[in-house]
Image 1 (cartoon, rainbow, N blue to C red):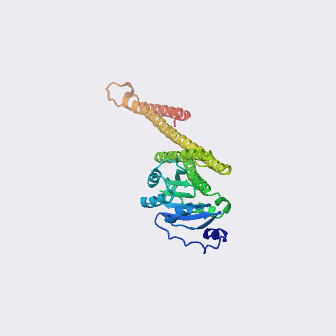
Image 2: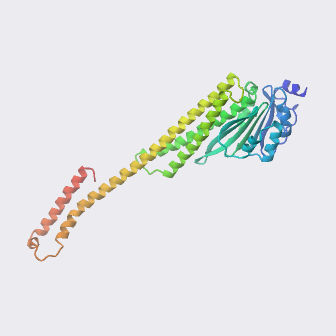
Image 3: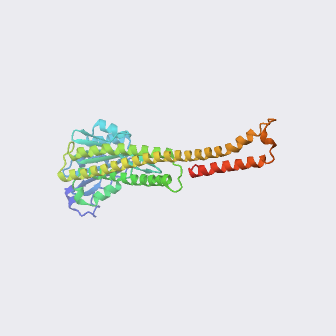
Length: 346
Protein backbone atom coordinates (compact mmCIF):
# COMPACT_ATOMS: atom_id res chain seq x y z
CA UNK A 1 0.00 0.00 0.00
CA UNK A 2 2.84 2.39 0.81
CA UNK A 3 4.50 1.71 -2.55
CA UNK A 4 1.25 2.27 -4.43
CA UNK A 5 0.77 5.57 -2.65
CA UNK A 6 4.25 6.65 -3.68
CA UNK A 7 3.64 5.77 -7.31
CA UNK A 8 0.33 7.66 -7.42
CA UNK A 9 1.74 10.74 -5.70
CA UNK A 10 2.92 13.65 -7.88
CA UNK A 11 6.66 14.01 -8.49
CA UNK A 12 7.08 17.16 -6.43
CA UNK A 13 5.40 15.65 -3.36
CA UNK A 14 8.36 13.83 -1.85
CA UNK A 15 7.33 14.52 1.75
CA UNK A 16 5.31 11.29 1.89
CA UNK A 17 8.37 9.23 0.87
CA UNK A 18 10.49 7.47 3.48
CA UNK A 19 13.09 9.64 5.14
CA UNK A 20 16.33 10.01 3.19
CA UNK A 21 19.10 7.96 4.80
CA UNK A 22 22.11 9.94 5.91
CA UNK A 23 25.02 9.53 3.43
CA UNK A 24 27.97 7.45 4.53
CA UNK A 25 31.57 7.43 3.46
CA UNK A 26 32.04 5.90 0.01
CA UNK A 27 28.36 6.17 -0.95
CA UNK A 28 27.73 8.95 -3.47
CA UNK A 29 24.05 8.20 -4.01
CA UNK A 30 21.63 5.34 -3.38
CA UNK A 31 18.03 5.53 -4.58
CA UNK A 32 15.10 3.31 -5.38
CA UNK A 33 13.05 3.80 -8.55
CA UNK A 34 9.69 2.54 -9.77
CA UNK A 35 7.24 3.56 -12.47
CA UNK A 36 9.81 5.79 -14.16
CA UNK A 37 10.49 8.02 -11.17
CA UNK A 38 12.61 8.19 -8.08
CA UNK A 39 10.83 7.12 -4.93
CA UNK A 40 13.43 7.93 -2.29
CA UNK A 41 16.93 7.41 -1.09
CA UNK A 42 17.69 4.03 0.35
CA UNK A 43 20.09 2.69 2.96
CA UNK A 44 22.48 -0.07 1.95
CA UNK A 45 20.80 -2.52 4.34
CA UNK A 46 17.40 -1.86 2.72
CA UNK A 47 18.57 -1.91 -0.91
CA UNK A 48 18.17 -5.67 -1.40
CA UNK A 49 14.59 -5.69 -0.17
CA UNK A 50 13.60 -2.84 -2.49
CA UNK A 51 15.31 -4.45 -5.49
CA UNK A 52 13.16 -7.56 -5.08
CA UNK A 53 9.94 -5.57 -5.17
CA UNK A 54 8.15 -6.04 -8.54
CA UNK A 55 8.73 -3.10 -10.85
CA UNK A 56 11.44 -1.57 -8.64
CA UNK A 57 15.16 -1.20 -9.08
CA UNK A 58 17.93 0.28 -6.95
CA UNK A 59 20.78 2.42 -8.25
CA UNK A 60 23.79 2.78 -5.94
CA UNK A 61 26.84 4.87 -6.74
CA UNK A 62 30.07 4.23 -4.82
CA UNK A 63 33.34 6.16 -4.88
CA UNK A 64 36.47 4.22 -3.88
CA UNK A 65 34.55 2.19 -1.29
CA UNK A 66 36.12 0.15 1.46
CA UNK A 67 36.06 -3.62 1.30
CA UNK A 68 33.63 -3.66 4.22
CA UNK A 69 31.17 -1.48 2.27
CA UNK A 70 31.47 -3.70 -0.80
CA UNK A 71 30.76 -6.76 1.31
CA UNK A 72 27.61 -5.12 2.64
CA UNK A 73 26.48 -4.40 -0.92
CA UNK A 74 27.33 -7.98 -1.86
CA UNK A 75 25.03 -9.33 0.85
CA UNK A 76 22.14 -7.25 -0.43
CA UNK A 77 22.31 -8.37 -4.07
CA UNK A 78 24.13 -11.71 -3.86
CA UNK A 79 27.10 -10.51 -5.92
CA UNK A 80 29.87 -12.95 -6.80
CA UNK A 81 33.05 -13.02 -4.70
CA UNK A 82 35.35 -12.71 -7.73
CA UNK A 83 33.50 -9.64 -8.95
CA UNK A 84 33.74 -8.05 -5.50
CA UNK A 85 37.49 -8.73 -5.40
CA UNK A 86 37.90 -7.05 -8.80
CA UNK A 87 35.80 -4.07 -7.74
CA UNK A 88 37.87 -3.60 -4.59
CA UNK A 89 41.07 -3.29 -6.60
CA UNK A 90 41.77 -0.79 -9.35
CA UNK A 91 43.93 -1.43 -12.46
CA UNK A 92 41.50 -3.89 -14.01
CA UNK A 93 41.32 -4.30 -17.79
CA UNK A 94 38.01 -3.40 -19.48
CA UNK A 95 35.88 -6.52 -19.64
CA UNK A 96 32.42 -8.04 -19.34
CA UNK A 97 31.86 -11.10 -17.19
CA UNK A 98 28.71 -12.98 -16.36
CA UNK A 99 27.96 -14.45 -12.94
CA UNK A 100 24.63 -16.21 -13.09
CA UNK A 101 22.00 -13.62 -13.99
CA UNK A 102 24.30 -10.72 -13.07
CA UNK A 103 26.79 -8.95 -15.31
CA UNK A 104 30.03 -7.36 -14.13
CA UNK A 105 31.51 -4.68 -16.39
CA UNK A 106 34.81 -2.83 -16.10
CA UNK A 107 35.25 0.40 -18.06
CA UNK A 108 38.19 2.80 -18.11
CA UNK A 109 37.48 6.51 -17.73
CA UNK A 110 39.66 9.35 -19.01
CA UNK A 111 39.92 13.07 -18.39
CA UNK A 112 42.59 15.74 -18.62
CA UNK A 113 44.60 16.20 -15.42
CA UNK A 114 46.90 19.12 -16.11
CA UNK A 115 48.64 18.40 -19.41
CA UNK A 116 48.33 14.61 -19.07
CA UNK A 117 45.47 12.18 -19.53
CA UNK A 118 44.28 10.86 -16.18
CA UNK A 119 42.76 7.39 -16.22
CA UNK A 120 40.26 5.94 -13.79
CA UNK A 121 37.98 2.94 -13.62
CA UNK A 122 34.28 2.27 -13.24
CA UNK A 123 33.02 -1.13 -12.18
CA UNK A 124 29.37 -1.88 -12.85
CA UNK A 125 27.20 -4.58 -11.32
CA UNK A 126 23.98 -5.03 -13.27
CA UNK A 127 21.31 -7.52 -12.36
CA UNK A 128 17.58 -7.79 -11.96
CA UNK A 129 16.46 -4.87 -9.85
CA UNK A 130 19.87 -3.30 -9.19
CA UNK A 131 22.71 -1.27 -10.67
CA UNK A 132 25.85 -0.61 -8.63
CA UNK A 133 28.60 1.65 -9.97
CA UNK A 134 32.02 1.74 -8.31
CA UNK A 135 34.43 4.50 -9.29
CA UNK A 136 38.20 4.52 -8.80
CA UNK A 137 40.74 7.20 -9.69
CA UNK A 138 40.16 10.30 -11.85
CA UNK A 139 36.59 10.20 -13.04
CA UNK A 140 33.80 12.70 -13.62
CA UNK A 141 30.86 12.29 -11.29
CA UNK A 142 27.82 10.50 -12.66
CA UNK A 143 25.53 12.97 -10.92
CA UNK A 144 24.64 14.55 -14.26
CA UNK A 145 23.72 11.11 -15.64
CA UNK A 146 21.47 10.46 -12.65
CA UNK A 147 19.81 13.87 -12.98
CA UNK A 148 19.23 13.41 -16.69
CA UNK A 149 17.67 9.99 -16.19
CA UNK A 150 15.50 11.14 -13.30
CA UNK A 151 14.20 14.07 -15.35
CA UNK A 152 12.66 11.75 -17.96
CA UNK A 153 10.20 9.14 -16.76
CA UNK A 154 10.13 7.42 -20.17
CA UNK A 155 13.81 6.48 -20.18
CA UNK A 156 13.89 5.77 -16.44
CA UNK A 157 11.01 3.33 -16.83
CA UNK A 158 13.31 1.13 -18.96
CA UNK A 159 15.02 0.11 -15.73
CA UNK A 160 18.51 -0.97 -14.92
CA UNK A 161 19.49 -1.72 -18.54
CA UNK A 162 19.00 1.90 -19.54
CA UNK A 163 21.07 3.02 -16.55
CA UNK A 164 23.88 0.77 -17.78
CA UNK A 165 23.64 2.33 -21.24
CA UNK A 166 23.56 5.87 -19.82
CA UNK A 167 26.72 5.33 -17.77
CA UNK A 168 28.65 3.68 -20.61
CA UNK A 169 27.54 6.39 -23.03
CA UNK A 170 28.68 9.07 -20.55
CA UNK A 171 32.08 7.39 -20.15
CA UNK A 172 32.60 7.28 -23.91
CA UNK A 173 31.46 10.90 -24.32
CA UNK A 174 34.20 11.96 -21.91
CA UNK A 175 36.81 10.58 -24.32
CA UNK A 176 36.04 13.27 -26.92
CA UNK A 177 37.06 16.34 -24.83
CA UNK A 178 40.31 14.52 -24.06
CA UNK A 179 40.94 13.93 -27.75
CA UNK A 180 40.10 17.56 -28.54
CA UNK A 181 42.63 18.76 -25.96
CA UNK A 182 45.31 16.44 -27.36
CA UNK A 183 44.51 17.50 -30.93
CA UNK A 184 44.85 21.18 -29.98
CA UNK A 185 48.29 20.50 -28.52
CA UNK A 186 49.30 18.44 -31.55
CA UNK A 187 48.25 21.30 -33.86
CA UNK A 188 50.37 23.68 -31.79
CA UNK A 189 53.38 21.39 -32.03
CA UNK A 190 52.82 21.04 -35.77
CA UNK A 191 52.84 24.83 -36.14
CA UNK A 192 56.14 24.96 -34.27
CA UNK A 193 57.73 22.44 -36.61
CA UNK A 194 56.37 23.77 -39.90
CA UNK A 195 55.95 27.44 -39.02
CA UNK A 196 58.00 30.33 -40.38
CA UNK A 197 60.19 30.16 -37.29
CA UNK A 198 61.09 26.52 -37.13
CA UNK A 199 61.41 25.88 -33.41
CA UNK A 200 62.68 22.74 -31.78
CA UNK A 201 60.14 20.22 -30.59
CA UNK A 202 60.10 18.56 -27.18
CA UNK A 203 60.72 14.92 -28.04
CA UNK A 204 59.86 13.82 -24.52
CA UNK A 205 56.46 15.52 -24.79
CA UNK A 206 55.80 13.79 -28.10
CA UNK A 207 56.58 10.45 -26.50
CA UNK A 208 54.29 11.12 -23.53
CA UNK A 209 51.43 12.11 -25.84
CA UNK A 210 51.80 8.96 -27.93
CA UNK A 211 51.98 6.87 -24.77
CA UNK A 212 48.80 8.44 -23.33
CA UNK A 213 46.99 7.92 -26.63
CA UNK A 214 48.03 4.28 -26.63
CA UNK A 215 46.65 3.87 -23.10
CA UNK A 216 43.41 5.55 -24.22
CA UNK A 217 43.20 3.18 -27.16
CA UNK A 218 43.71 0.21 -24.85
CA UNK A 219 40.83 1.55 -22.74
CA UNK A 220 38.43 2.17 -25.62
CA UNK A 221 39.05 -0.89 -27.76
CA UNK A 222 37.98 -3.57 -25.23
CA UNK A 223 34.95 -1.46 -24.32
CA UNK A 224 33.83 -1.72 -27.93
CA UNK A 225 33.86 -5.51 -27.57
CA UNK A 226 31.75 -5.16 -24.42
CA UNK A 227 29.17 -3.15 -26.36
CA UNK A 228 29.12 -5.75 -29.12
CA UNK A 229 28.36 -8.48 -26.59
CA UNK A 230 25.64 -6.37 -25.01
CA UNK A 231 24.28 -5.51 -28.44
CA UNK A 232 23.93 -9.19 -29.31
CA UNK A 233 22.43 -9.97 -25.90
CA UNK A 234 25.05 -12.59 -25.10
CA UNK A 235 24.93 -11.76 -21.40
CA UNK A 236 21.83 -9.64 -20.73
CA UNK A 237 18.50 -10.09 -22.43
CA UNK A 238 17.72 -6.79 -24.13
CA UNK A 239 14.88 -5.64 -26.31
CA UNK A 240 15.52 -4.22 -29.78
CA UNK A 241 15.51 -0.51 -28.82
CA UNK A 242 18.08 -1.12 -26.09
CA UNK A 243 20.33 -3.01 -28.51
CA UNK A 244 20.29 0.00 -30.83
CA UNK A 245 21.43 2.21 -27.95
CA UNK A 246 24.44 0.00 -27.27
CA UNK A 247 25.15 -0.05 -31.01
CA UNK A 248 25.32 3.74 -30.86
CA UNK A 249 27.90 3.53 -28.06
CA UNK A 250 29.90 1.11 -30.18
CA UNK A 251 29.82 3.57 -33.11
CA UNK A 252 31.19 6.31 -30.85
CA UNK A 253 33.98 4.03 -29.72
CA UNK A 254 34.93 3.35 -33.34
CA UNK A 255 35.18 7.10 -33.92
CA UNK A 256 37.34 7.38 -30.82
CA UNK A 257 39.62 4.64 -32.13
CA UNK A 258 39.91 6.36 -35.53
CA UNK A 259 40.76 9.70 -33.89
CA UNK A 260 43.38 8.06 -31.68
CA UNK A 261 45.01 6.30 -34.62
CA UNK A 262 45.11 9.49 -36.70
CA UNK A 263 46.63 11.47 -33.83
CA UNK A 264 49.29 8.83 -33.18
CA UNK A 265 50.20 8.77 -36.88
CA UNK A 266 50.35 12.57 -36.94
CA UNK A 267 52.64 12.59 -33.89
CA UNK A 268 54.91 10.04 -35.56
CA UNK A 269 55.03 12.19 -38.71
CA UNK A 270 55.80 15.31 -36.65
CA UNK A 271 58.61 13.46 -34.89
CA UNK A 272 60.12 12.32 -38.19
CA UNK A 273 59.72 15.78 -39.71
CA UNK A 274 61.40 17.33 -36.69
CA UNK A 275 64.35 14.96 -37.06
CA UNK A 276 64.61 15.70 -40.78
CA UNK A 277 64.43 19.44 -40.12
CA UNK A 278 67.17 19.18 -37.54
CA UNK A 279 69.34 17.16 -39.90
CA UNK A 280 68.74 19.71 -42.68
CA UNK A 281 69.80 22.55 -40.38
CA UNK A 282 72.92 20.66 -39.34
CA UNK A 283 73.75 19.99 -42.99
CA UNK A 284 73.32 23.67 -43.86
CA UNK A 285 75.63 24.71 -41.02
CA UNK A 286 78.20 22.08 -42.04
CA UNK A 287 78.15 23.38 -45.64
CA UNK A 288 78.76 26.95 -44.51
CA UNK A 289 81.63 25.90 -42.27
CA UNK A 290 83.13 23.84 -45.11
CA UNK A 291 82.83 26.73 -47.58
CA UNK A 292 84.50 29.25 -45.26
CA UNK A 293 87.22 26.73 -44.41
CA UNK A 294 87.96 26.28 -48.13
CA UNK A 295 88.09 30.06 -48.67
CA UNK A 296 90.38 30.65 -45.71
CA UNK A 297 92.62 27.75 -46.76
CA UNK A 298 93.87 29.70 -49.78
CA UNK A 299 95.52 32.67 -47.96
CA UNK A 300 96.64 30.29 -45.24
CA UNK A 301 98.43 28.07 -47.77
CA UNK A 302 100.05 30.99 -49.60
CA UNK A 303 101.15 32.66 -46.39
CA UNK A 304 102.51 29.36 -45.20
CA UNK A 305 104.55 28.90 -48.35
CA UNK A 306 106.16 32.32 -48.11
CA UNK A 307 106.67 31.93 -44.39
CA UNK A 308 109.00 28.93 -44.73
CA UNK A 309 112.07 31.23 -44.50
CA UNK A 310 114.15 29.51 -47.21
CA UNK A 311 117.13 31.59 -48.29
CA UNK A 312 116.69 31.08 -52.04
CA UNK A 313 113.11 31.98 -52.97
CA UNK A 314 112.87 33.90 -56.28
CA UNK A 315 109.69 35.76 -55.39
CA UNK A 316 111.27 37.34 -52.31
CA UNK A 317 113.40 39.62 -54.48
CA UNK A 318 110.47 40.95 -56.51
CA UNK A 319 109.58 44.58 -55.81
CA UNK A 320 105.87 44.03 -56.56
CA UNK A 321 105.68 40.53 -55.08
CA UNK A 322 103.79 41.62 -51.96
CA UNK A 323 101.01 43.27 -53.92
CA UNK A 324 100.84 40.47 -56.47
CA UNK A 325 100.42 37.84 -53.73
CA UNK A 326 97.77 39.88 -51.92
CA UNK A 327 95.88 40.44 -55.16
CA UNK A 328 96.05 36.73 -55.97
CA UNK A 329 94.69 35.91 -52.52
CA UNK A 330 91.78 38.31 -52.93
CA UNK A 331 90.92 37.08 -56.41
CA UNK A 332 91.01 33.43 -55.49
CA UNK A 333 89.00 33.98 -52.27
CA UNK A 334 86.42 36.10 -54.14
CA UNK A 335 86.09 33.46 -56.84
CA UNK A 336 85.53 30.75 -54.24
CA UNK A 337 83.06 32.93 -52.34
CA UNK A 338 80.85 33.55 -55.38
CA UNK A 339 81.12 29.93 -56.46
CA UNK A 340 79.89 28.74 -53.04
CA UNK A 341 77.21 31.45 -53.03
CA UNK A 342 75.93 30.28 -56.41
CA UNK A 343 75.73 26.70 -55.20
CA UNK A 344 73.86 27.91 -52.06
CA UNK A 345 76.52 26.79 -49.65
CA UNK A 346 76.75 30.38 -48.35
